Length: 293
Image (cartoon, rainbow, N blue to C red; front, side):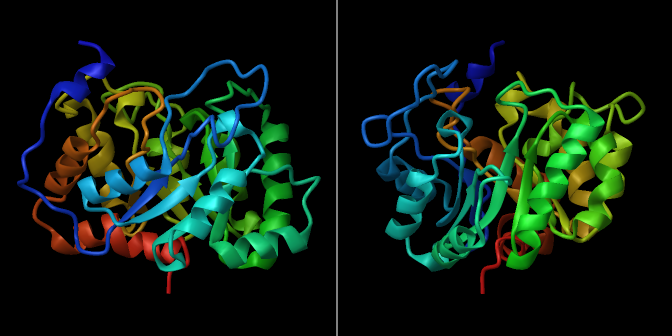
């Protein structure tokens, strides 16, 4: 069955997220308003601001984090505009920038608008870095982010790369967000064979590290998400559930027509009736991570 099989399923209203929940990873992709740069390898599915607000209402996730998509590189115009359009109490932003070419004034201006992180996206771009290269990049970003106090580095990289990242967690001194389950190489999770899993576990012991429960279609072809259960429940169990945030990854650039509601309800189900865990996954942890007062 193809990944797009997920789109054909309709979800039942059995599970609802807690009031005031957050969607910790969405994009706005409007080529007419924000033209793509020349020479991009793949044209992503369009997702308008109106569509993002509609998705928020559909999922019952009224608060949202606008995350830079690889297509736009370091052009954060759409994020800045989105933050200006959505009231500060219900939005945050994660930008992209070159740590060698950024000034503190720009970071402060972004911070005032609601930006709370930078994204280092290696997986979407197919970027391969050595141990020295990834560690150098992270140290450069951390140097820029530490004065901001509340910012994070969002890392989208193969889980195996975490073997190079884990030794730096304390030295970095900033929050780290492992995007899309930490990006495993295969499912269902086999903890004895998954490269980087031991490092992920060690990282998640640190209160500055978070994992996004998001974008299942990137890894799973199972419309019932059974092959994700072990992975998700393992992440939910770490640090008493204090290190996970849910995200829809709207507009699902790799799976047009996908509806995140089924997976959202599955995650609520996997909380096994623990309302405190549901609140952490969908609201409370996000408010801490994204510096929401």
